[in-house]
Every structure is written in C-alpha cells, then in structure tokens.
Image 1 (tube, rainbow, N blue to C red):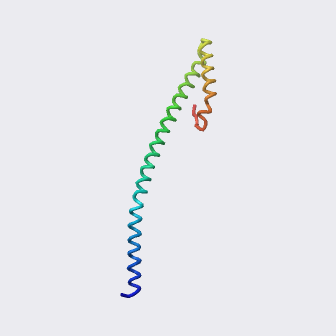
Image 2: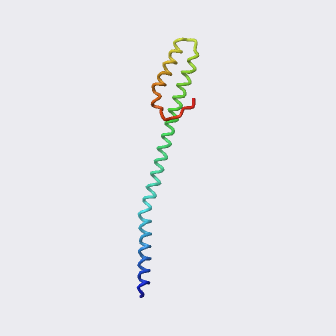
Image 3: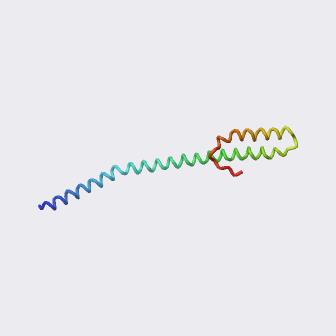
Length: 101
C-alpha cells in the first residue's frame, strides 16, 4: 500500500475514535447539565414564590395599618402607627425589592 493511503486510513481511524470518545464522554455532561438546569429552575421558582408571599404579607400589613390611621379611636390609630414603625424597621429585610404601593 502507498504511504499516503496508509496515513489517510490512520487519520480516518483516529478521527472516528475521537468522535466516538466525544460522544461517550459528552453524553453524561449533557445529562448532568440538563438536570442541573432543571434543579436551578425549580429553586428559582421556589424563590419567586417565597418572595411573592413576602410581598403579599407586607402589602396586607401596610394596607391594614394605613386604613387604621383613619379610625376615630385613638388606640387603633396608635396601633397603626406602631405597625407602620415595625414595617419601617423591617424594611431592610425587603431591600433590593421594588415596592409599588
């Protein structure tokens, strides 16, 4: 056989082996990446749900306190002021979030 033909055959065999090894070792990486993304998406959804619940509780407390400011009873108004003060003190927990109130 000619030397060029032998080198071509050897190159072809090396290329085929390279492709096979890439497939064999690449599939677990793709599977791992798929499940990592799936897990990340689940954690992100859980985080969004928790933030929404915090937003709703904050909004409800704030709305209730503001509505109580208009009460004729002094005790209820003082309680509303106290609630607003507590919300203001805890506002650091909510930093970084945009509030549309």
